[in-house]
Image (cartoon, rainbow, N blue to C red):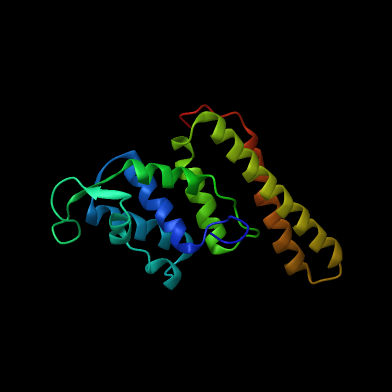
Length: 180
């Protein structure tokens, strides 16, 4: 983790792998393909994300093969109790500042696997996400004030970012049942 307790890129991949396996055991190849698809859809091809290995999770004792070896025979993989504990820690990590690719990926992964947390922790995470986005809205509004004479294209772009973040805040503040 970074000093602010936000996730580094490799930890985002770890969160994805452990979250998927917490939902259900998966064949090694299916797990790798889903991780690659999801991360590529959010951040595009990234060297920072390619270095993370399912094999490392096995070596660390966080996941295990149900039968078979792993990659060589496409074994079904499952999460171990140590992996569940690591997943909970990753889900409770802070979000970084700004709308960078890794922060977007981390936010989407936290939202994707939020239901795996106990209900009270889900609410605490939702509140943390809301506070992070509210700070970002304030920063962007300040940028608009400071650059009031900037070209309209710039101001419109920042204004669209603010509106999108405000829509996200509305969704996060809406009542949710634990299964949503």
